[in-house]
Length: 113
Length: 113
Image 1 (cartoon, each protein chain N blue to C red):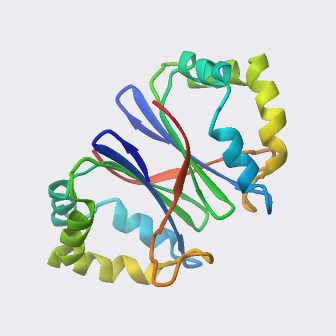
Image 2: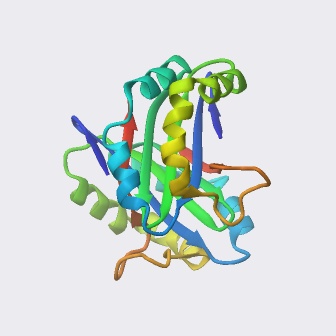
């Protein structure tokens, strides 16, 4: 995570299970409106997920002042939880993920404005 | 790459060689001013590199109108080439990189403004 005044840049990584890329991309071509609405209400902006092979990288900018609270709000949202029942079976943590970690937080090592 | 009006979001991935993380982070804590200047002149903004284990992820926003020309300008810059003699030995392409690819371009699969 990179902290720039009030805005935090958050990079994270996870893997797709072998063969899951097509279904993951199909789902993400039309993410449910309720999922997007909860992200926006939770102060998540400029959010992009990229893929190379089975590797997914997520970049987002958090513009709120209560990151833990906003992430908890996303996790508690019923629509988001139903969405995750579709996406979670397609993914697995990277081999060096921490205990219980799903998407692994990445450390910023360089930034240019 | 994700194209948003004139701006392109570019995500790419590479690996660090085993044991190279500390030296890579040391170098990137004080990137040479000439390297940064060339990036700025080449229309690269909001550029962050993240690390998880030996995995490096790069996110940047390209705001020019000649991506190929600007990338060629970066590659031709003498200071940048000297910088790369320090950083290149620390890195290696991901296993599924294309022929001759160094940092691998990642495909955008999702975006929220």
